[in-house]
Image (cartoon, rainbow, N blue to C red; front, side, top):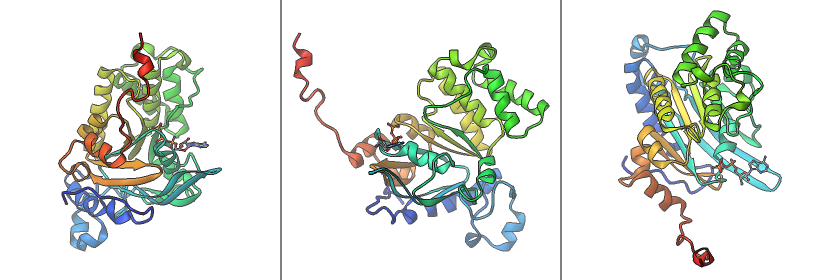
Length: 311
Ligand SMILES: Nc1ncnc2c1ncn2[C@@H]1O[C@H](COP(=O)(O)OP(=O)(O)OP(=O)(O)O)[C@@H](O)[C@H]1O
């Protein structure tokens, strides 16, 4: 496929979210022991040889599968019937204008916000009927992070690890690793309330990763993060995906998504306009050009603001 998938109706997008592509990708991901192919594409013999990880990678399931997801706040339809298939081992970008519904979608996808309608499955586990099982498999960096910010950075990451039931020794060694990876060693003993916005983001990301989830759901992970730290975090995420993990992140930075993500979905007004591999969605354009052409809304810069130049 060379063209992106365009969505006309809220419930017609399941076959168009790169599902077939996802399956073929899953198949090739056997090479890196990440994503067994779905049952219908593989013979029994192939299954016997497949290096599966049965606890985290059930055959034929997506890392994240969203079906018919709707969220209505009073009279505002924030999410309007989304279907999305996020394949194992993918680096998936979710993009959209302010208010498009990204945070609402990711909050429902991770069990933090109850959907009005629809289902979400993480590694085949229903988020709303089996929340504990589902949450074990996912690390979440929410938007507008709420943290226990009277703890130090080190205590916060440690606390997250203990909440996940990890033993003390494992928590201590992973906490040290994460503090180093996030360039937070010097700030480890300071309380999080005194952190900058970027440092807060990084400590929250570390807390989201300590239990070694198979899926990371990250809302605007690079917002306010300095370029050096952002590059370091990108390397961490790329290595995580290379080892078979799955990342879904939201961002407004098209260049970053184009560079980092092998799959992308464009959201507007609560719906998906396009989804698939990044190459499919771009269709020969840059992601930014494709995004603007699909979403629209461009107008003359400064239109109606001539008073700004009056001095
Ligand atoms: N708790 C809420 N109550 C009422 N409306 C809400 C609530 N949360 C979100 N909305 C509305 O739902 C719509 C989608 O919001 P959402 O935060 O999901 O968008 P977004 O794509 O993440 O935006 P941004 O890129 O600006 O973060 C917006 O119109 C927003 O005002």
